[in-house]
Amino acid sequence: MLRYPVFALGAATAAAVLALMPLSQADAQNRNLTIVLTDEPTSVDGCDSSQSTVGRVVLHNFYETLTIMDPITGTLTPRLATSWEQLAPNAWRFNLRKGVKYHDGQPFTAQGVVKTIQRNQNPAVSPACGNRTKFFGLDKFTFKTPDEHTLEIYTETPEPILPIRLSQMTLQAPGASETSISRTAVGTGPYKFVNWVPGLEINVVRNDDYWGNKPAVAGAKYIWRKESAVRAAMVKIGEADLTDNIAVQDALEPTLDHSYLNTETSFLRMDPTRKPMDDKRVRLAISHAIDREALKPLVGKDAIIATQVMIPTIPGHNHELDKKPYKFDPALAKKLLAEAKAAGTPVDMEIELQGRVNIWQNAQEMMEGFQQMMKAVGLNVKLTMYDRAQWLELLNRPHDENRKANLLQGQHDNNFGDAVFTVPTRYKCEGAQSYTCDKDLEALIDKAAATPAPERYKLYEEVFRRVHDDFVADVYLYHMVGYTRINPRIVFKPNPSLNAMIPLSAISFK
Image 1 (cartoon, helix red, strand yellow):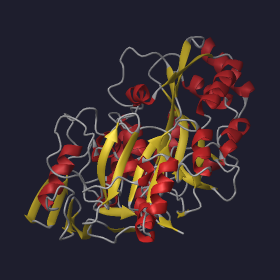
Image 2 (tube, helix red, strand yellow):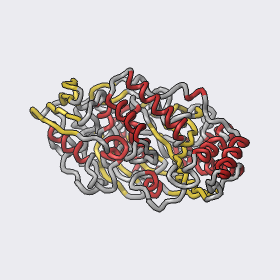
Image 3 (cartoon, rainbow, N blue to C red):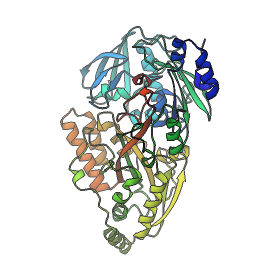
Image 4 (tube, rainbow, N blue to C red):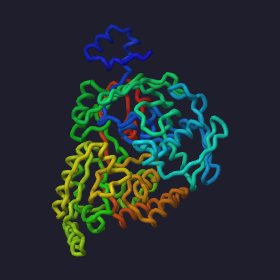
């Protein structure tokens, strides 16, 4: 029988109940956490785990992957696969862990893994599965299952890093809907989904039948508050144990607040298919109109000015570009716009600056700063802030064919060890988030994906050079720094993966 944790009670009632309990029982109850996040998840479906609001709740709590990448060392280690080997350039064999069960009692088998991967790639699942649009939408896999614990995966083209890529394929129990995203969760992980009260909370409990080590945390409640100051205060007064993303101006308690490079890169995606932004000079002018140093205090002094949408520690990052960021030069921006106007480009056409509410702390203030800077060089810019659901429709395909010129506020997270998790989605012609389409660039991207290291990474470096120099596809902003507040009663060390997941099993108690 499920015992609801003390945090479901009022504070005074909870204290009274704990006082009456035997010490061991009170201690067990006190092993429940309250985690306060910025946004309510859109789902708890495994195939949405690439969305940060979903992944922070489900990834390696409800759902696991075949392999797992250490976010600090970059080491790939076993999870639900115990070993793997490459049979041919386009074929891999995975040996699966035995004795594992899904939360509903079904055995974990190779056939079940196949069903999950096929569902993740199924375009009929609506809304679009986040893992498909971000990581796996352009892939074509076939499978063999020699026995229940052996899985062979065959790819259409050579796939030298498939084990790394599968560290992003969360595995849910067979039987999930083939047409819709789920609001319940059945995986193999160390925690089970209990319930979701829309607009209020998600409750989870430890899976005592878990195949691995028993974690210290007995259960957790996830709640959400958009206001950074509110979330920080909740942790300070003991109403919550952890909040993942507070604003720099709220991170003023050295004993509670922890900073970390969070693997996110912020940018503005430009639309080169619409006037006046189809003129490269206009796109360059926008990049030179932005004073990144002046706005840097809004994201934190330790943020790094970006030259590409992937952090420097991921192989394939072009470090030569870091030596030549787009400089704040309003005079040059005005000169470029004048040249474009003289050539017939309607530089006074309205451009919509499309922001997302709470995409990062101080995001709207930053967008207002961008708007004023672009207006100052002569651009006609309208700022519209969208909620997350509206923003996702703008971000992902299908793009509105009747759209006007736009700059979309974005943030990209790659802590997965390879540029393949960034490049195809953002820069291939049919990439889920791409406005860029060039056949030579696409051929280079495909060649890089099929080439082993170290040549692979040289090819990706060239992709980023072309995107930066030739296409000017994005306004690069910052490699971001995060600030998290942690209750002193728990032990938790934030690392670069915190924006993608908060594994409860990594938390212990003092």
